[in-house]
Amino acid sequence: MAQLEPIAQGVLAWLNDERRPGATNAGVVVDDDGLTVVDALLAPSHAQQLLGELDGLGRPVKRLVLTTSHLAHVGGSGVFTLPGVYGTAQVSAHMDQPPNLDGCCRLYPDDAADIGQIADTLTRPVTHTVNEGAWISPAAVAVPISGELAENLVVQVPSAGVVFAGAMASFGVTPMAATGDPAAWADALDQIIEWGEIIVPGHGPVGGETEARELQDYLRACVAAASSGGSLPAGPWDGWSGRHYDEANIERARLLAAGEDEPPTALLALLGLN
Image (tube, rainbow, N blue to C red; front, side, top):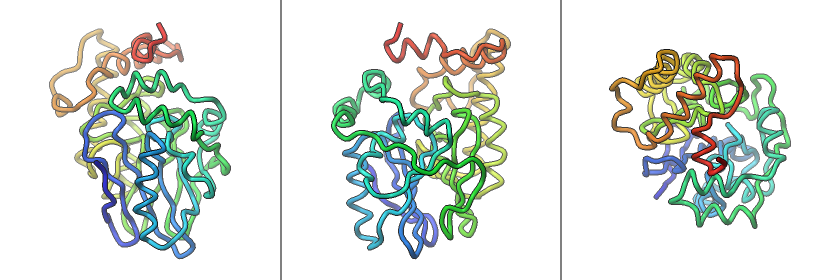
């Protein structure tokens, strides 16, 4: 289940109470001209539930910001038919390609039926490419950042001290770093912490510096395990869901350290591609 919760004045979050990969969150910023929505959830039916709640705010959705191109965060974008869609150049290029629905069903088996809806309600292409930090509404700033992908976006609401980190934060749920750069992601979290005291992640409950530091420690532990050939030590992540991502995250760090920008074989196995 998910529900719309106030975070600060004019700032809300659509929070999924399940703590597992694919159970994603979204953000909402209220301006006089309309709403800015951050991320579009995994599937059209999930996005429809969010839109139903937004109807009660009495303002149109004017902007949809995609923090990544990974389907867990953009699969419901086709439901948002009218707003401008904001993303980085990399996200734009990915959104112009057909989604890998079979692979996504393997990653998120609990949501396979909902993912199938995407074949009928196609995802939206990016209409506004964000190459540098910019105000996209009177209250919201979209800022490119690197980590989960080479080119992610996050949305700041400076007046409220809120950061919608989207795919760049995962609290209580193991992140998927296998197509990004775990070391760069860990470093980027320092910046996200500086941008706001309240961090709304793409997965998990709302947090702040403590939760972001735990994520940072996990990512750096993956990099260290890749270097040493060992395994992850004990840590806060021991209780996280999605720990089957560990192998792919560590392998990705090992490949990047060797100068190989390739998908990990462990990721291909998760997607059913090998």
